[in-house]
Picture 1: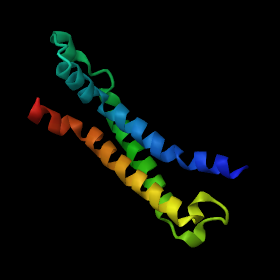
Picture 2: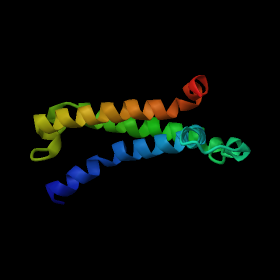
Picture 3: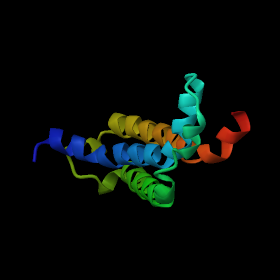
Length: 119
């Protein structure tokens, strides 16, 4: 496997975590976005198709971000020589990306609690 493939594989947990966070927040963010765009109607209140799956999405978010956090914060000695994990600049950039996307995911996952306060 080439180093390029190793780089692509290590982004899977972060990308998966963001996608799962979006899935977990669709039941609340979807109607909010439609209302913000000026689209309204009684049918918007019925956009709760994914609500039963919300806990499943939240667990996926936590697992994927936990895994990606462990990957970018593990000791540099645990990294194989020649991988992106062993390069300090790359590690720092990935740590920033993981924390930024984790904050975005937290905002999305918790949206059902704060959106009613501002809508």
